[in-house]
Length: 193
Image (cartoon, rainbow, N blue to C red; front, side, top):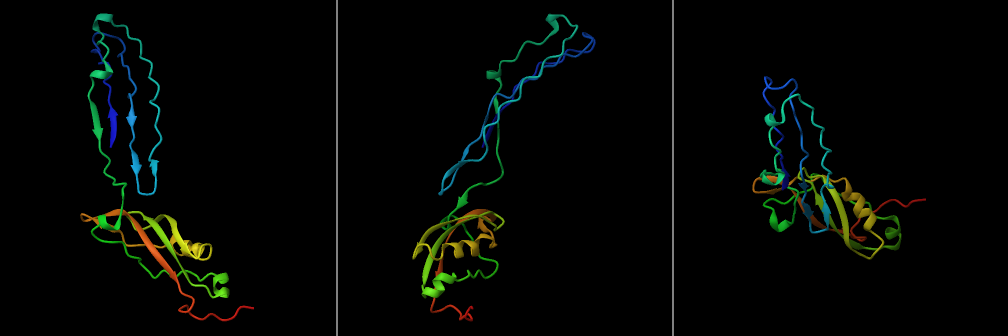
């Protein structure tokens, strides 16, 4: 939620009383930007923005009695503006419809693991946008370590998914996937020179 405080400007006297209208713009006091809490880390969405410098007032030929009194910024109520975008990454328990891969995802079997006859697995956590695009991924575990992580990351980095749904609308989602590398079950490849 964004909290914006609006400050009223001085009123403009009637054109009959003065030769030039008097205007003054006062800067917005503060803009509070919340932090996005995810299960991975807490990162700020936006960096704080400094208020713009005040605009100098135009000098009028009116008498001081006709000018409006200055407005106390503390007396002006704050206006709350709600962002309509849901920036939360929902877990599998929090969504009504789980995301599904739009096409088969087949990681390349690493050449070194193939030569050694190794099998293994990699657990990935994917951060999916509401449109099903992979925004980020993280290796949670790998067995054996250092063998299959790169192949799993590359296979899922550009994968596309149907969006997760919550209360009838697409939302961001956290998905944990275990990728199995089975040397005995992999298709035979011709010998390389």
